[in-house]
Length: 246
Image (tube, rainbow, N blue to C red; front, side):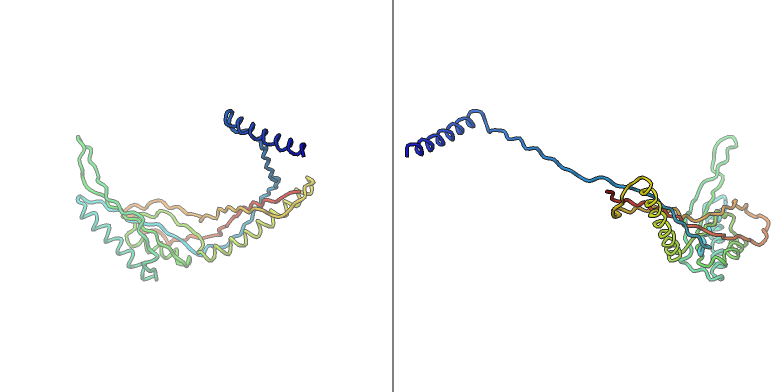
């Protein structure tokens, strides 16, 4: 009984002493070590895929530029030529949704004889024509140049959304197969055990191919019948596969 009372007394004295110590010296610090481990072992390979086809869409950039002593005269001349071109294009089946104005500018012309002064104004309008049937490209260009266009910038052959999606799918499958084959070959040679694919990244560069034309001077001699050919365009895709390793 005395021993039990002595133990209780010792415990009470300990907690009283601990209470007094924390009041005088502050809380007792405790050190906790925190360790975080992550598995970062991974293996990457890249594969390339490509698919080609004849383009099924063409964009033709053209325009009219006219100069006159007044803004109104220059605008009237430019607008008249553009209207004439558009009316003749619509006879080929071109609709308003296939035509887009990309620039309309009015700029002063200067005469530097003795002192700078405005001698007139130049008005320029540029238009993009998109054709879904590239067989009409040559006839469209002839119509544009024969009816008043004195600017022809470039022709871009490309793909409609549906055609491009099919080519991208073909190129993507080839790129993934190429990347997997390369991964297996490299891993075997290096003695690495591949796990599951944990990440896939893709990049592509299937840009349309432009054909450039020099600007035509106003009043130029009528040119022979246009003959442009689309050739083939390619869609190229690069796929990066990331594997877990053991």
